[in-house]
Image (cartoon, rainbow, N blue to C red):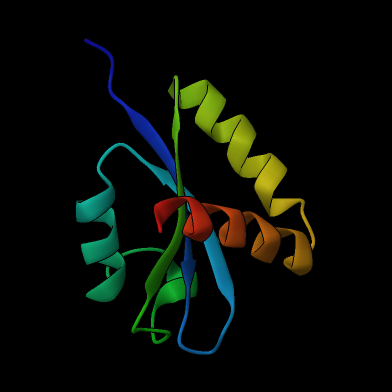
Length: 88
């Protein structure tokens, strides 16, 4: 069975957004919170999950991550707004 990959976006305490992929979202967020995740998120906790999206494969997750990282901040926030509204 192939791993399930997830694209995720975190909002840092300084208001910046971090986008990444993982095959275990809860573990990865815990790593970010403890300072053992990406260098970018160190010192920027607390972090808030503002977006996640299941991807079919690692390859698709990488492509989607590149596409989301290429968006402007406003476009990323619009993506988060749609995600949050669906969750309500």
